Length: 455
Image (cartoon, rainbow, N blue to C red; front, side):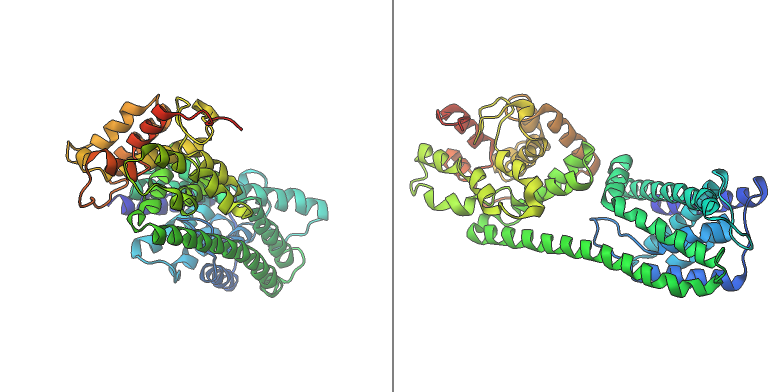
C-alpha cells in the first residue's frame, strides 16, 4: 500500500509542477505532436537498452539524455510526457508497481527539471537563434543545472522507495545512487546539449536524432563496459567464496550472511558508493585466508594454543591471496584486520579503537553475530540473545558505534543474518572450531602472544 501511495504522490507532483509551469509562472513551451512522438520513441529506446549493472538496486538509462534534451525543446510538460511514456514500455520492469513507479518518478523528474530550467534563465530553442555564447549561457548552463536537479530527484525517489520497501535510510541510499553514477554521468548532459543545438539553432529538427543516436550508443557502450567490469569482479569474488566453501562445507552461506549484515550496518552508518562496495567485497572474502592456514590447524581439537597460533595467520594470508586484484585494493585493510578488537587484544596487529579500519570493525560485528546465531546455547536462551551478547561486548571486543548501528539496522529489517541452526553445538571444543565465535576472540585475547602488534 505504501508503494502505491508513493507512486500516486509522484504522479500528483508531476501534474502539479507541469500545471504550475503552464499556468502559474507561464514559462512552458509547446512543441508539435510529431516531434513529441520522435522524442518518446528515442527515450523508449534508451529505456530498452539501458544498463542495469551499476549497482545493487538501480540502473542507469540513456533515456535521461533524451529527457534532458526535451526540456529546452518542449518544456516541463514535454519532458514529463516523454519520461512517463518511455517507461510505460520498460521491458525490465518485473512488476506493475515497478513499472508505474518508474513512470511516475521519471515524469516528476522531467517536470521538476523543466521548471528548474526556466527558473534559472533557460531559453527554449524552437524558432530562436543564438550566438555561441548565448547558447552556452541560456541553454547549456541552465540545462546542466536542470540535469543535476533531475539526478537529485531521481536519487531521492529511489531512496524513498528503498525506505518504503526495505526500511533503509533515505539519504544513505540516495547518496549511494549518486556515488554510483559518478562524474561520467554528466556526459549525458553534454550529449543532450548537442541534441538540442542540432534540433533548434542548427535547424535539423527531428533529423538531429540521426546524429545523436550514435553518441547515445557510444555513451551506453561506455557505461556498459563499466558494468561488464563490475560483473566480472562479482564473478571473481563468487569463485573465491565457492572455493572457500568447498574447502570447508560448514562455512556454506557464512560469507553471504556476513556480507548482508555488514551491508545493512554500513548503510546505517552512511557508507555508500565505493566504500559500500569495498565493504561488501571484504565481507564476502574476509575468511579466504583460511584456505591457506587450514592445513596448519592441529589434529587435536583440545590443542588450543596451536589452534590460535595457526588461526591468527589467516587474515594476512587472505591479503596475500587477493593482492594484485586492483578492484579489491580498497577491501584489503578490512580483510587484514577484521579480527582486531576495540580494546587492542585482537589479531594480527593488535590495533585498538579507531586505528582499526571502519569496514573491519563492521565485519567484526557481523561476523560475531553470525557465529552467535549458530550457537544453540545462545539462540535457545531467549529472543535477541545474540544481539544482547554483542551489546555486552561493545567497548571491549567491538566498536560501540558499530554495535549501535547494528541494533538500529536489526530494528529496521528484523531478519538480519537468519541462518539454520547446527545439529549440535556444545562445549568449549565446538566453540573453538568456529573461529568467528566471540569466545574464540576471548581465548586469543587471554593468550596474547608477544608477536601480536609487532611488525
